[in-house]
Length: 515
Image 1 (cartoon, helix red, strand yellow):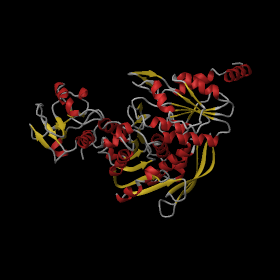
Image 2 (cartoon, helix red, strand yellow):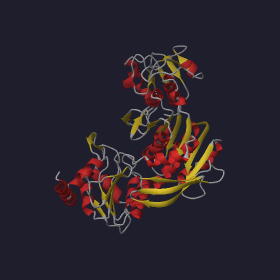
Image 3 (spheres, helix red, strand yellow):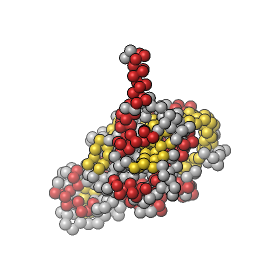
Image 4 (cartoon, helix red, strand yellow):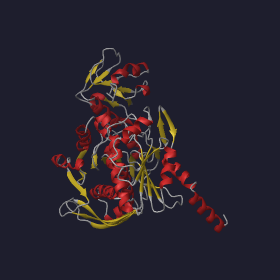
């Protein structure tokens, strides 16, 4: 294995040594000091990987890369109109992932990496695992939807799962920062595109598999197949954690067992290898007991309290706990790590300006996630639950009416815009409305998201709960081709402060304290 490289000093790599089954055109070997799949980033030191994308084959950009000075091309077939040396491989995505890992000194091999996939719960599970491992004395990096962290420095995320080069770069940063482990989110897109193909996982988590991204995958079977690719990334001695309570992920239990890796099922029933029993729950959090089935995992039985509300977060805690136990963390460290995580940005994040009702901002943008959140909030709320939601434009249209059905579990709904992109907000809303059950009339329509949030607050009374769903931690609204600043959390707090009841309470407090 090559010696470690600093993140900004990649190691030159012989493609003939790295890819012994490759063939070469115009040369006997190619030495790569850098690599990219984006022709716009090509230069005289960078090999261009011609990878097929969602809509366009990367081969079409090879000429552009060469014109920018690219010295060589990695591709799946010889390119007759390209004059530079070429490395031809059966699978360019896999080869590119392997090349990026090698250029940065195979950093993922120096970390205990846990990959988390699933339709919902990826971010919260990854954040919980990072908190637990930190409490256990480890330094843990993080790559996910919200942010990238090398365990010391944090930057906003650009993709749920970064491309192969960026991922290798961040793994190198983690190693250089002294991290011993990493929690990474693996989207279905990333798994199908093999972005993490060169990353050996010490643990894999499948939180659930329900409908999402059908605009990309086409159908559930392709989506499930993409999720199942995480099983092939688990290294010898690794473990696979699967939510047995979810029908979709449960379909992968037997295939996981066939890999020969250790499989740990989780659930809210005693049948799961690692299970949880609820002791107390409210909108302020949940107290529960984690127990193991005999002979399944290390024998454990301990109590945990989390400020993350709702039962789906108990499942996220179970998933992180299963991985932490495999990594030899103690029950005391696990309980401490869960308790020390007050919230996850945009995941049932509380917004409190002194209003007489509860407000939560959540990233739920699939029908399963929205239904679960609404049902959980209803079970914990004394008053009404008011749900505000929309659907993204230029994305899976089939899930729009499904979102309406899920939201109809609330006592009242406000339908609005959520990143309409190049579609008409009015058309998106019409697609949504088709899904409300016959007889459900407690919905309000307001395409302007800011005014919609204000409308939701106007419907709320003391003891009620308002759920602002869909965008979570996002700080922009995509309208047409423009990205406009918009943060549900900031807008909600601003509008709450303008409520007469909040302004009166603030004025009274100021008068009492003289401030």
